[in-house]
Image 1 (cartoon, rainbow, N blue to C red):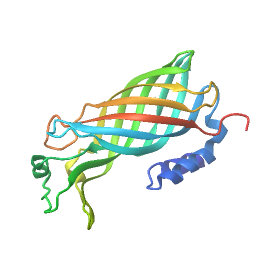
Image 2: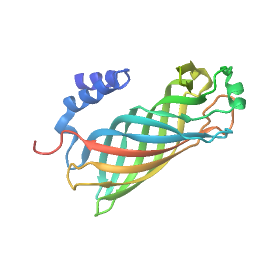
Image 3: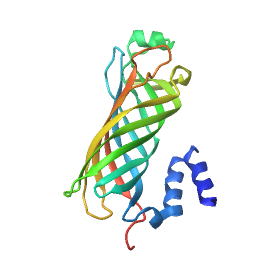
Image 4: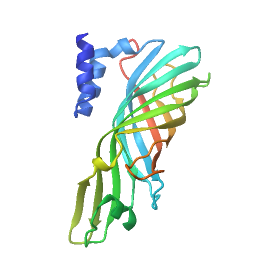
Length: 228
């Protein structure tokens, strides 16, 4: 029970990297067996918010952990948490800034909406004998921070300003994720994959049909498995 309490505390703390290390130290080989695979999940994602005038994608880095459970033969349940992840959109228009209550600055620059979520998928995965897999299922997000970021760069100065607006963002996000990937080695190997997320809930309060969309390029690295 002591390990479970420690796990819960660190999962929801702000020290993301510390929690990844702690999880691997606490569980190690116990979470990697014939039926369970545990490890680090990281990569890049490109996101936008449908229903807005802009459709420029926001590029972000994400990291967390994954847990893969073998259900029967080649069927698996894939879950985990991306503890550091951003969704949002780049290059907001003047109409969108007005809706968000952002007064534009005199300097020329770009505005982007960035939203930090804890992202948790719950996907059914089918693994073919050639180590290629396909996956489908719901994905959930819990917002913990959001801001509009202004960036401007000239020969004389560089400006980066954040105006936090998490009160304009709905707390909960959910949708459907579909993906595919390939495991490089049969046992305890790195998995490379791609996943598309289609949000089904509104991002902004009072702004209908604003939904998250994102493409994730993923790398899964198992931890603690094998004889070593």
